[in-house]
Length: 119
Image (cartoon, rainbow, N blue to C red; front, side):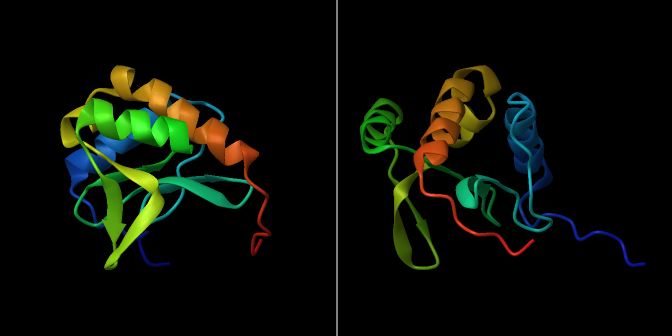
């Protein structure tokens, strides 16, 4: 059996993301090469290959987050992901400060219509 592929993101970013996910026991980190979280088939956070974290938030939380942390909507694969914000690197390093936003992201994902999964 071949070894499990490692995430594409830098190891320190993966470690910071894993600390954040681990702080919310009801959430499981998924993805071998692209770490992400989802609930009911709806992704609500992920770490891209460069180590940038994206987090899905409600409109109100999204606007507040962007203003508070001087960040933007997340860009991936040449498109703007309208419900995702880019988490500043220093904030990803601060699990305690980011955790309330991560909880809000999880709560928002719970309100979305469940998507069928392949399993």
